[in-house]
Length: 351
Image (cartoon, rainbow, N blue to C red):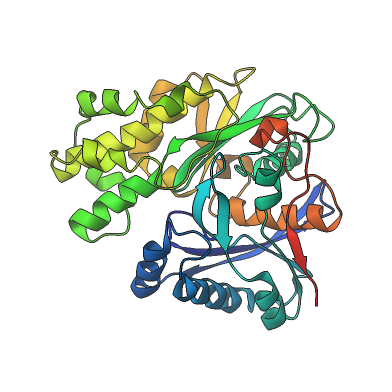
């Protein structure tokens, strides 16, 4: 998995039949260099037909390098890098040559996970919910729980683990809550040359400016009913809203924007969840976690409290989905992406 925060590539082993999780295995991380990150940033927002060959080379080389250290993997799920996502317009596009990666690794590779869903009227995102359903059952959850991924974009999955399958009515509700780490990362990169507000240190020194927060919450996206999804840069206006603020107040205000978007999203849950389990880089931000805890009625905890790995959950999800695709099982449903009917997406590059 290479996400919209552009920090690097995550890889994780998973043993599964596409329904149950039997075991979690080794994991690894390959950080992008500053030069590679610059190349990927330059390609964001581009569509097929525009030259992104340099970015494609970065993605292929970084993934091949990391995956070479997992020779025991029988199958690889290769998400690629999302450059543009416009499900109600031009579609969705992830670069990443699955056939070239399969040739390098000498193993079958599943890739292009989102296009089939969008072609059938879905949002193409989020795609981790079917895996979250398996995680809730692996945990032994007996009542609804919710998973919140705070990556570049925030996405929420509400799970009722008492249902028999993730595509069953009432099993899942999922959608993007709003921007999460991406705009904040862009802010500190532009102003301070940093890749993120590590441990929320900058936001902790600042104060939330209510006027900017209120303007942010006027966006039409928050009034749309789920399922719904976002592109990484859909909320680039956030940088304009904090342009006149000093660094600390800008970081605190943008952190509050992301947290408040989650709070609004939680109102869509059919039944209030017993726990909100947070994964992704945002769970390492104490300011973000305190804001969520203060604004929500349920327990807000990092997924590690449930025995899961919050840094690798997305990578594990695409391993899980790869097996489902090989076995022609659905990977999304009306309640997760708004697709017309449960669909199994993806292409398979076989060796």
